[in-house]
Image 1 (cartoon, rainbow, N blue to C red):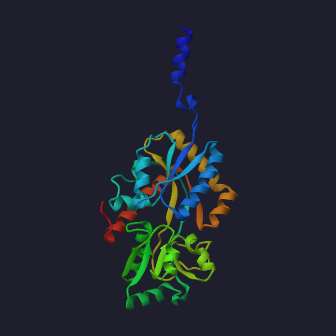
Image 2 (cartoon, one colour; image 1 turned 135 degrees about the horizontal axis):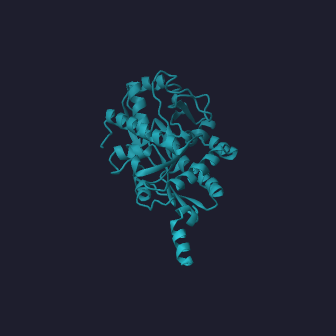
Image 3 (spheres, rainbow, N blue to C red; image 1 turned 135 degrees about the vertical axis):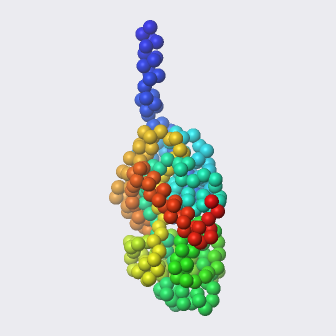
Amino acid sequence: MLRTVALVCILLLPAPALAQYPQKAIEMMVLFGGSSATIAQILADALSKELGVPVAAVSRTGAGGAVGYSQVRSSPPNGYSIVWNSNSISTVFHSGNIDFDYRAFEPIARIGMEVPALAVRADSGWTTLKQFAAAARSRKMRVGISGRGSFVHLVSAALFQKMGVEVIYVPYGQGTAPAELLGRRVDAALQWPSQFKPQVDAKQLRVIAVTSPARIPVLPAVPTAKEQGYDVDLVMWRGLAAPKGTPKEVVTRLENAARRVVASPRFKELSATLGFEPAFLPAAEFGALVARDDAAIANLMGQLGLKKR
C-alpha cells in the first residue's frame, strides 16, 4: 500500500520536478550566414554557460529561412530545438515560401536588432541619397540584394519607392555584397553594416544611409534615410522562438537565460563590433512586437506587389 501511494505521488508531481530542463544539448537553428551566423554563435556560446548544457548553433539555410523554420516547426515542442528568428518569418510567409506564419512558434525573447545600410563604391562620387537618386534618374542602377522577397529586398524596395526611382535588383549569395560592389557588378547594395565595415575603413566603399530611426554606433557619421528626407524606418529584429506548444516553464527558463546574456558586458562588447544592437524583450512583449511587425510587413509587401499570402 505504501509503495502504491508513493508511486501515485510521484506521478502527480509536475514535469519539472521529474525532469529538470535542460538535461541535454539544445539545437539552435540558424537560418542565414554572415553577421547573423556570427551573432548566433556568440549567443549560443553564452547560453551554453548559462544553461549548463551545450547550445549548438546549427546552420539550415535556404529559401529565405523556409528550410530552417520548417524543420524547427516539425520538431517536438520540448525546448531542445529552437530557432534564431527574425522578421524573415513574415517575409518568407507572405512571399509564399511557407504555409505557416509566426503563430507556429512560441516567442522566447528578442535579443537585439540590426540596421540595413546602403553602400556604394567610394569612387562613385555619391555621398547622399539625393545624389544617388539624381544619378538613378538618368540610368537604372543595379542594386544587390541577398534574395528576392528577403528583408533587405523589402527595405530596398521601400527606400527606392520613397526616393521615387526604379532600380534593377541583382540577387547574390550571402556575405558577398562587398565583392559584388568592388567587382562593379552592382552599383549599390543594401546589407548589414558588419559586411561593409572593413571596406569602409579601407576607403573602398562608402555607406550613404541607414534605415533606422537614429544613427547607429558602428557607423556614427552615416545619416539615416529620414535625416535625408526619406521617411523609412525599417530594422531587422533578431530573437529566439520555439515550436508552438513548448511548455511555459521551458520558455521562461530560456527567456531568463537570454536576459542574462544580453545584459552581460561581454555580449555587448562583441555585438558592437558587428553593428548588432542588444535590445532584450521578454517573451510576451516580443510576441506582441512580432505580431505588429507581421501586419506592417504584410501591408508593405502588398503595396510593393511582393505579397503572395
